[in-house]
Every structure is written in C-alpha cells, then in structure tokens.
Amino acid sequence: MQFFEYAWGLLGYLAPFVFVLTIVVFFHELGHFLVGRWCGVKVEAFSIGFGKEIVGFNDRHGTRWRLSWIPLGGYVKFFGEPTVAGGPVDANAGNGLTPAEQRVSFFTQPVWKRAAIVAAGPGASFLLGILIFAASFYTLGRSSLAPVIENVRPGYAAEQAGLRKGDVIVSIDGQPIRTWNAMQRIVQSSADLRLTFVVQRGSRDVTVEVTPQRRDVNTPFGMHRVGLIGVEPATGEGAWVKETFTLTQSVGKGFQETGFIVDRTVAYIVGVFAGRETTDQISGPIRIAEISGEFAKAGLTALLHLAAVLSVSIGLLNLMPIPMLDGGHLLFYAIEALKGRPLSERNQELGFRVGLGLVMALMLFATFNDILHVAPKLMRLFG
Image (cartoon, rainbow, N blue to C red; front, side, top):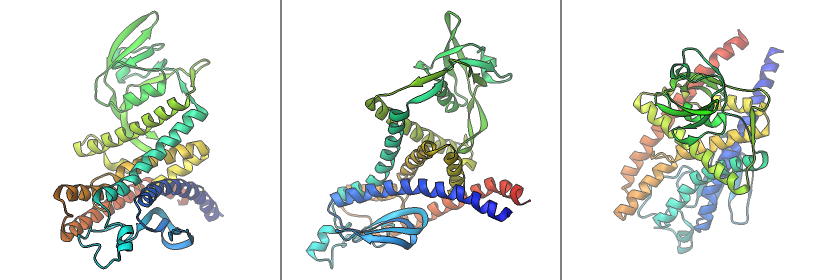
C-alpha cells in the first residue's frame, strides 16, 4: 500500500514537471523553427523529447513533428545538419548537393542567417517569460503587502541600524518603494552591501544605513543564500496593496521581471566564481520536478509562473559561449564572420568535444546536488 501511495505521489510531481518542461522546450524550439523557415531552410524534424517517437505526423512542408519518450528537452533538425545537436561547419558543405538542396540547406546559408536561426531559440525563451509575466500582471494584477515594518528581529542588521516598528519604507538608494516585495528584492540581492533607507517615522522622514547580512533561507526554489536585515511586515487589516496594470504597463512589467531573473542569475554565476556563492543551489531535473509539484499545488497560475522563470533561465543558459549550446554556435559564427571563413573542422570538433564534456559535467553535478537534496526525504519515507 505504501508503494502505491508513493507512486501516486510521484506522479503528482512528474506530471507538472513534464507540463512545464514541454511548454518551455516547445517555445524555445519554435523560435529556431520559425526563423529557420523564414530564412528558407528546410526543417526535417521538430521533436519534443528525445529517443523513440511516441506519436508524430508530417506537415505539408515535409517536417516530421514528433513527441518522443524522454521528456528532457527537444530539438529542431534542419536539412544539412549532421546531428540534432548541429556540428562543425564544413566550408565545402554545399558540395554534392543540387542547386535546389543548396538553397534549403542550413550550412549553405549566409552566416547571418545561421546566427539568426540559432539566436531565435534563446530569444523565444525570453519572449515566453515576458508574455507569461505580462499576461499575469494584466489579468490578475498584483496584491502585495505595504512596506510597513511590524517587527524588528533582535541581532539583525535592521535593529543595529535603528529601524523600528511602524516605520514605512519610502525608498532604498533613491529608488521608490511601494510594496514589501520590492523592498525584499533589493535587500536579498544586496548582501554585504550598504543600503540607504529612507523611512517615514511619524510625521518625518528618517535616513538609515543598513547592510544586509548573507543568510541561507528556504524558498520555493530550494535553499538560497540571500541578504536579510531582519524585519517582518504588517499583515493586519489594510496592510495589502492591490495594483492593476494597463496592457502597456503589463508588458513593461513583463520585461522588468525577465530582466530581474537575468540579473540575479548572472549575479549568482559571478558570485560562484568569486567565492561569494555556493554551488549547492545548482539544480537538475529531480529538483525541478519537485518544485513543479509544489507549484502545481498552488494552481495553474503558479505553475505558469514557474514555466516563465525556467524559460528565461534556459534562454540565458543557452547563450553561454559553450560549444553544444546556442551561445557556442554563435561564438563560432562570430569568428567565421570576422575571418571570412569557418574555423577548421578540427578546431570546431575539438570545441564541441570540450563543450559536451562541460555540459555533461554540469548535468552530473546538478543531478548529484538533487540526490543530496532528496535523499533525506526518501529515507524518511521508506525508513
């Protein structure tokens, strides 16, 4: 009986995970597909998932649309590509092809077209995030707590700086603060940095210098190391602020949310190399599946929000200049544009091998982190 309960619970995580990943992958690959078609390149296959095909059909242009068994990604294969992951650019790629085949082959296209096709994937990932965020702001608005301090925790930076119960946060480093969430975002991303708070205290404004302390906190995305100052918001009657947005404002907010995710992701990566951040926050498919299940419990809106966050993150990850990723292809195309010819096949092949090694190492490390995260929960379940 316990096994069946566990299997049913596991399905509650896998189904939302597949739903979210399918949306994210489909939109990313659709970017490649649409720009490829626009550039006149023949698309041989559009697959959601890897491995053996579950179901599929051919469209009138000869593209095979597939749903495959392994739902951990997807691909678009263009005519002339040696594999679904692309490959080295052959300076003689057009040899042996008929004039009609050369016109629709990927590798015989000008370098700017190939670059546009590759860049369209990450571009579509960012666009999906913007659209989901914008739709959420436009249809639901946003309810947030007012930036009113209800409690100051002993021993934290806020107490040391002199913040008090009842203070209303007006601005931080000159940036107006209208909601508690806006304050949190600035504080959490500013660990060990001195911030200038302007608070309304009674009938006057008071300026306070606060330096958030770096602490580990549990979030819906796992344990994160962020800046904290040790304050809690007022939650009583009248503490909530309801905001509504026009279509134009919603789109602007969509860009802002996407930019925030990009900024925090880049800051984290830089922090890892600088030694300020730990690598235990790097997550793989197991942790993402767990997060998907938790978000699904909060409803479709929360699950779509997760899809937006993952889409932006995947778009940014794919722009890293690592061969095998879109950014690596773009790097090779930039070199080709500057030199007037592609890198030698040997150098490209070496780059792809190194890139594959880096990607596989990152996947293994992320999966190892996932296992360390879920192992205690499994031991409690079966112990």
